[in-house]
Length: 297
Image 1 (cartoon, rainbow, N blue to C red):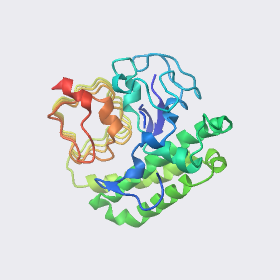
Image 2 (tube, one colour):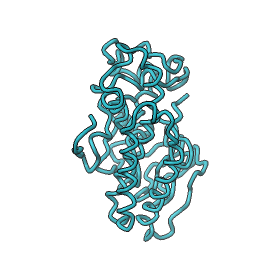
Image 3 (cartoon, rainbow, N blue to C red):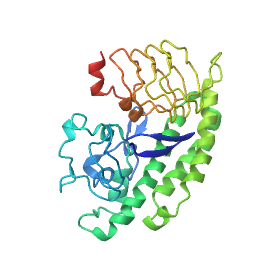
Image 4 (tube, rainbow, N blue to C red):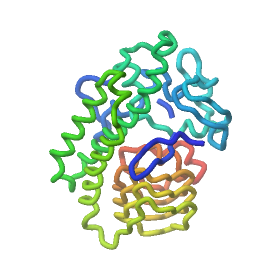
């Protein structure tokens, strides 16, 4: 069982682990505040969510309970061998920097072990903050899309409003209607995607499609909408995914060896981490080739 993270066009399942303030530095245009900094987090992803024994987790763990592999210093005791020890799910989760935001800003550096009375509320705030930081990531990417220029003012406003929400108190955050805010932002993201893909001829629409195990080897998916598509275990070897919109697409176990993902819109690291690829897979410069892909060469 995977953490079910509410994404765009339906839930998609991702699972890893890991400060705000001031003008954020950027890496390939993305704010460092939107990248997990586990050193500044109180291992919230190792305690807040529940998971069940499966191909992705070796054990059952209830929500709000620390994983038995978590040390008292908030470090994972098996971090270097998670996949080998049956915790593959932990290697493909991204909090988008929400962990350190909750730990260092929302709760002002007070950890849930030294202040156990804050634990329940901190664990409730974490997934809400994670949703907001995911939105910040996508809006930041949309702002870098040249073709989305006509939406620049609206996107900046959405970014500012979302950031404002992340600065609220724990009490306000737990009452926040994230779903409504997400819908409003998603309309902008969809509009940005359509502007970017407008000139791609014969583009396919697979939005929300069930493509589990589909044979898409060598498929021309340039500019396709794969928003929320289920591509679990799909064969995408050598597929052309340039400028495809993959927001929320479930790529668990999908084989993207030799695929071209240049300019893929709203592609995130955890999608790559959940897929299988090789040295021939072409990626956007802002993302990293997963280490476990080497076995696919």
